Length: 438
Image (cartoon, rainbow, N blue to C red):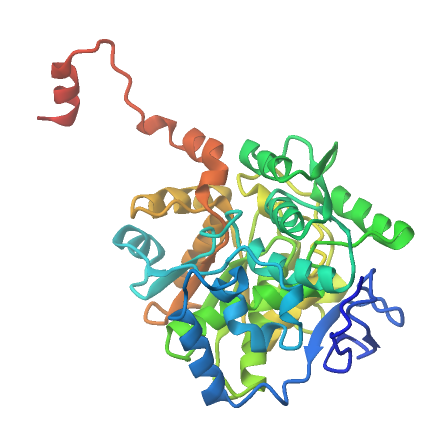
């Protein structure tokens, strides 16, 4: 049963191209019926309070955790409820207390490797399912609940399937996930299974999985949990809100994101614009976005070189190659237009990371005590490229979005570091002492 309290005049869908409006709770396809483009979620912010009130509210919520609170009241996403989904009734919120993630200064090894001393990471792998997808999942499933949805479906390279399955399970919904056979890690396969989802493997890349989902949405009325559903983007905005909050409501010079299907880049840009719209940030505030793709899957980075007006004309889906960064192995991102909108609006850049560099980034980051995923390696390698080319100066403040825990990708990490393993021919302590130079 749909929520009787959700006011469609306060929150609605609006086409990013022609501004056609649609009902967030009634929409299923999430493509504009007039021009075929994607939707944004829009809100009436007129009654949420001024910026001083909002900043105080957000800070108070950070210090008000207790055993009496509901999950959503402990969430680092719903902490910013007034900016994310201000008119959604509390009864519809589905949360696993996600989103309270650390922002840490890069260690000495990573800083030296990248070439800057003002590098930070927001560790979004420290969430219930181990990736940034939980930021969007809590909002998407909450809207699904408000809309009376009882089942969701998604295509995935691993992280989306874990998120969709976990949050659907929490809400009492059914979930089906469509995955590329042999192209996700055992951990990522186990996650939707343990949450009770129906797991379907197909003999093709993610882009084939996404085509299936789009057809299920169009012809069979399935409810999508992928980022074409703009409710996901609303939750992912919390990345930008937490970064601003951490830096005392100022923005760094750069936010760096790996780009797969595009939800991360889309939401960071939208989050910055939301803060300006609501007065949290002054309109003069300027933060640029660096989107990074791997050599194996870089259709947007290639089209970016054509410029702001020509990129779409020259955009071509890419036949993906092999890469350790399997979660970003996507040759035709569904949120492509939103990604490029935010890159160009922020006067940002796109970079392409070589496979050897993204692997090295994971290793170097690990030497500082942080185990990041290969997708984060793409972003770190992209920053390094930009610093070396002097498009990013070494004194600028940079925040890299670390999208998932490296514990989901132990096979690739171990495979790439086999040379660091020492095999002995005996079990004598003296032999070990010799290796340790004791």
